[in-house]
Amino acid sequence: MQGIVVTTESEDLQLIALKLKTTRKELGYSQKRVAEEAGISRLRYQDIEAGRSSARAVTLINLGARLQVLESETDLSYERLLRLYKEVAGKSPSKGQLPFSTDWFMTWQPNIHASLFLNIHEYLNKVAALDEIDTVIKAYQLYLEQMQSEGLDPLLSVTRAWRLVKFVDNGMLTLTKCSCCGGHFVTEPYENARHFVCGLCQPPARAGKGSSANSLRLH
Ligand SMILES: [Zn+2]
Image (cartoon, rainbow, N blue to C red; front, top):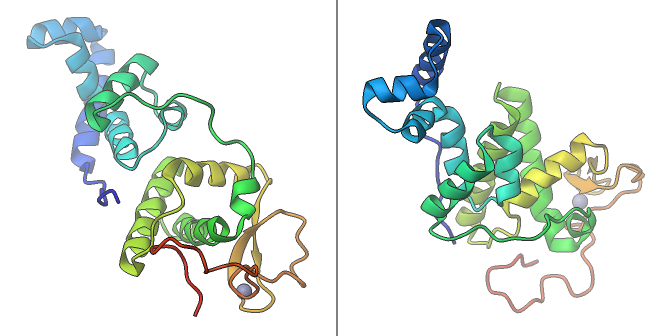
């Protein structure tokens, strides 16, 4: 499993990046001109000015995010993201479509992982004033910590976690309270909450008998 990457990008650096950009625009200077006067390449200067976006992108790549997530959540160009991805991940990003169906979240083990993540996410949403993507990042880091402390493999990828939040925002999925244990689980929105029983209270027959050592087990 990948190590846990905690965002340590200081707010000071972000502030400096912002001031740099504001001042440059006030002076009517192009990025090229500032870069030339500073004796650095324009790309390098762009990096500095885009400090915040780059920091987010690096964190997301370290967490294993797909390129599409970065494209959607940062204002960096595709070319820059591609370069950054190769630099940080040490390989090219995988091609192919993002999963766009809600089915995965409805299967037994994934549902429990997704529910855990979403509960953390909803909690952070209430108590912390973070940007949307930072809430996803922080919640996912806390989910990974939880998995690590329980000795479980994190079934939920950061890309799926991000996708899940979009599904909830779009009203395609929601959290429903289990009528048995009172926990909140990811369900379709039309689930009847009065009769809903979660996958932990009523696991499928073969649940927990899988061969994987680090998967969820019922005692
Ligand atoms: Zn339950």
